[in-house]
Amino acid sequence: MQTTLSLAYADSVGTLTLHAPEGKPPTLDHEVMEAFESRLTEVEQNSPDLVALVVRSSSPKFFCAGANLKVMEGINADTITPWVLRGHALMNRLEALPIPVVARVEGYAMGGGLELAMACDLILASTTARFAQSEAKLGLVTGWGGAYRLARRVGLSRAKELCFTGRMLEADEACRLGVIDWAGTADQLDTYQAELLAAFAANSRSALRETKRILATVTSTSIEENGPIEAEASVRCLREGDAPQRLEAFFAARRAPKK
Picture 1 (tube, rainbow, N blue to C red):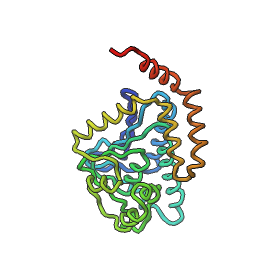
Picture 2: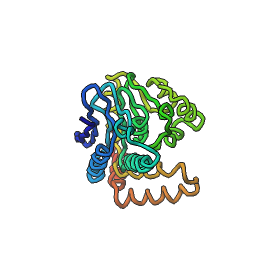
Picture 3: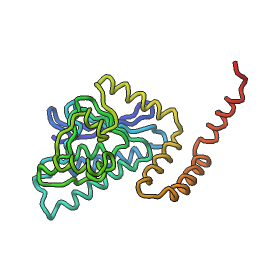
Picture 4: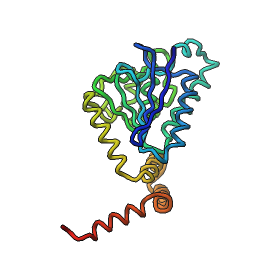
């Protein structure tokens, strides 16, 4: 048996869940990646009606262990390039979804599993979560954008230390270093996730979409280039989004007599 994926919706939030055989970690192979792509297509089609997407595992012990061992057994210098590039394409597509994407991590997120989590906008974790960019232990490097995204989360020197050692981080340290964004007990995780999604839902979906588009450019553009980018996004908010209605309601509330 291999990892399977399910996609469910509730209260305008999509939840993409990785399911693995009992006692095994979710992993990715070519078939799972193909299924993942199919789910992302569905999310893209439904994105105008969605507040966010949550990526999680059905297992409390494992979020994702990265590549399936059967794939790795057949990898060699002639076959690894398409494998790396396919993983990059999947992670980039997940990152580029036009809605906020939250990784909910319980248990181990190692190697490609951490790369999957970092392709999401935010990483929330239970205190049982563990994180490692551990490819060097197998004589390999990050293959799905892990070094790239880790450096942007924690800085270059810290990313070097974590990749060079491959050491395991407990959730609290991962949060302190900036590898993840929040950590707490299972009950606290449920509460915080609900509060976070409610805060997203209270805001304009078109504004969130445009904000995510802006933030995707900030590490590769200057502040001078940022001006036109924000101006174009502002135009879309007013022409295609709900900014006019929200502004009208805001000013109407200010004009209303005080009780």
